Length: 446
Image 1 (cartoon, rainbow, N blue to C red):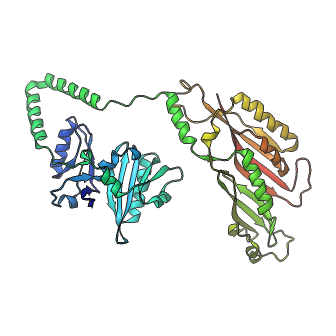
Image 2 (image 1 turned 120 degrees about the horizontal axis):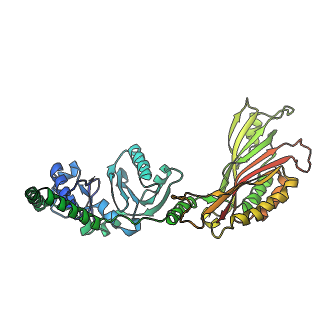
Image 3 (image 1 turned 135 degrees about the vertical axis):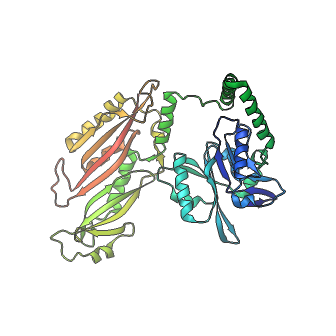
């Protein structure tokens, strides 16, 4: 599709090819242009990729300059190096299609310069692009709702971008040109000369060409194990977490003020929060009908269900019902914040380990697991002096012990919460009507 944007002709939906072979890139591009009968192509002298118009656009007669949208987007600094440009094109409020340009490592990605009208095809293309750049890229354009198609671990940032901004970024680097016949003639002459020179001359030319390619496209510098480990930690540390010292009191406040022990004659049995994170954590609550309860039915439960508990599902022959709730944990906190000056593994064992030990007389379980390496070091531990360590911890016992968690260190997260309710239980040192089970992670650094 060729659009006129402020007087400039811009092509979307171009065909892109990766150039392979022992010839110079310009000769390879000219050969491809001849094969597909392209009248205009995009190629730079040393680039190992080229683009040409699709069959429909190739038939359009244009005297004006023609630019590649994908080539222009690849040179815009704020979108580099990975970006998915996705623009919902409409005419007078009517859907026309989606303009898509995928940029990976600063160049148009083959197969991702398209004009799509079918939304199912668009969804498949979006998911495929996420996998091509490991889920870390910029989503540019006017369709931020597409982020709903991304997998949960995608680290994409939306950048509003208009067609006018593409037009502003057009220049010689995005211009489509006629294929160079001179390049083809030069290649023919070179081949003839090589045939005359024979094997020795060919070997010399091949070596010279490889040296030229090495100069034009030097291999990326090898990263040290420490640099690779730092990148791995950075990707892992982008997830939201919840500090145990703040999440536990927030849960207790929600449980005591907003979670009814009985709803319409049904009694609370369990509460489970399987992934405690900021800013809000979802929990599953199970209510049951006791054998001795009279008059409690599904209707009585639904009639008394509070507004902040939702999605009731009856099960176990209508003897249990599951509902969804949740509580606010506080401002979003990412793991990166916890990895700033964490304690040494021995300091964690001595300090936090001792805190858990003091709770054992009143808890059924209070343990700190063994410390293990956090992240992946490509070549073992060589070259990484200060690796991160993690240790899981568990605390099980009466809910009244939760008040002690306020004193937990700032590098300790709360990952899971489970509450078992037995209103008939007789309180004791390690027993109560509300039994609490907590799981979390403690962080340290060598």
